[in-house]
Image 1 (spheres, rainbow, N blue to C red):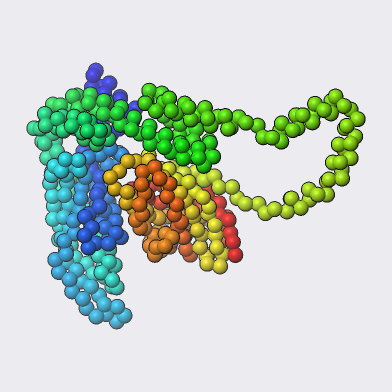
Image 2 (image 1 turned 180 degrees about the vertical axis):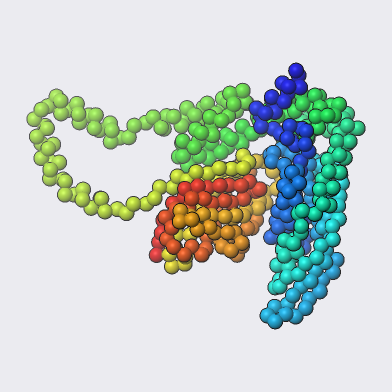
Length: 432
């Protein structure tokens, strides 16, 4: 009965590691770049994600301690002269390491020889090499199966040490790390119920930290006079959290602004009272209105601007995105999307990966990341830029090769700090 209650807690709180503790899954980590470019590093990480997904071992939880880290070791490189560009022939070894990202425990590794060729720069050659890695290779299935078994053995044999490490994390304020660490204890281990009870305590403390991030986002919306969005964030803060009193105070302040009627409404009420009391005044008002009718004609000639109210969804809850504008430049066949992104996740590293994935307009045209677009001041559709905690960061994305004046994008997808941001129903304002 106790185990059922703990499992229900996990279901309600949304904290999973390895599908209710019965199947151990992994997150793909980027390699240590060294001389490797950011584009090659991201391509290698995506290939590892494909391997994990193919073998049913890809983690979908925000909290997950088990990771697979790739390493690419170049063994031999040879260049030959082609008709137009030189051809690079490369031999390398792909190493995959299964480990715990929080304590560094190693659960297995595999080394796979790979080879490939490419024209142009070495970056292009390496991306071609990575693209040729076969995710269906049986070696990867054995690697994942063996890593899972070693994890089960590790947790069974080291329960006491694991609980001590989790307690140290909580004592030092690393509540989210403790949640990730404890939620990955397999159900079949002797200390599962003890870990589950500690998980309840750690997750409660982690939510208190989360409420501080939510308050920061709400205050940003309040400063920008976006009161509806601020209230939406505040409504999600639990009444039991330490931020409840501050959230109620900010809510009261916002409601005062929302409930203030416009001055024009107050004037209309006064005029109505005067008309009732002084009947002769009605004739004067009517004559003045008739004289002023022609003056209102030029106001109707203002061009209509599409309202920006796209639907935005996130794969994780560590970001807030606001679209400032979406403008098409007809002469350049380009659409410029301006956005503000705020990180709501505390991190020791402010550097974030920004990437454009795909777009589909209302005419059914698709704009694939490998063919179009670049970030402001950059030449690629993916790049890095600092995204400090709680600080709004503005950046523009230039979507190129838009050959027709599409009125709206039905779908856009970005990946920012490993969070998939999906934007739907975004209208375009066109300029010459």
